[in-house]
Length: 403
Image (cartoon, rainbow, N blue to C red; front, side, top):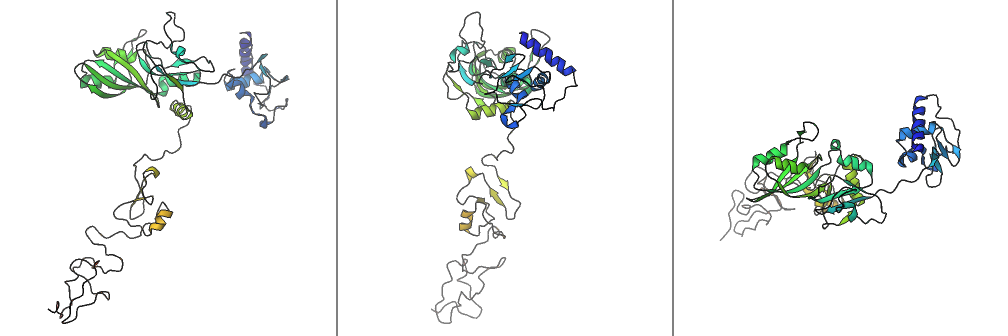
């Protein structure tokens, strides 16, 4: 307590005194390769904010390896250096632990219960034996996903309404809830508070799962966390809650756990949770969703699907395009596309080496590959690839065939 008061007094004195020079090299900790900046190490150890730690350093309250450090910048190695603030040695902050629990009914989320009821933290047998706190509490009769951690900053952001980290619930209500009541619940309901006049709940996402005469099951997603909010909202519309289970907390879903089981968050889950709480910047540029089509500006049009949906040569072509070379298409996923579009719909495409009727004309045009029949001789058959009716066409003045 005395050390905390002295550090606070030193900070107040340093903030008032602006004559301290920051850039004088009066110590030996000026090599940036030694480790982290001193004020950051102090802040991570829980001394104060980084700005307040800078003021403590400038006030002469910090000693590293027996040497006074009162100028900035300074770099230290927390694992090797002896850092003391106000005479008290800094200790490494405890390792953060992130756990999700399938909370059963009849278990309280508080860490101190005078009635001696079962607590959620009693179900966690973590090897580090770290003191954990429940984030986004569930009442005694509710079950489902419960998040526990010793990371105070993340816990605050997950529960503060300003960051709008949503929580999803499956709710079973008594009776058949009509559409007007469901719309009223979705738009928000006025709830009185113990202190003050109360206010209207924020708009929530609501989806009907099942409804019959005896009960109605809905999925409800909230972005605020008032005390017993869902139960009070349902009571206002005359449909008391029979069963309440939290199935989602931000991007984390209740999957793979039985009632009473727990596990630690995986690294990918923790990153998505911290991103949802605003502690990580959003990913730059998301890949298109599966099945999304991106139309090129080239003519003819080529439609490219994501890699997971590509088939064959690696592209998807519309009917009015042609690939010049199958080998090239396989070697190059982008594929070379013919500069000219295929014939209009309804026109026949001749095979390689065969004759084709001119666009807009009827009958076959005489070419060297198709010989005219001679008088008195049998007419030769037209190539198989020639259009229908080519065998019947003959030059003027010739017989159709001698019989």
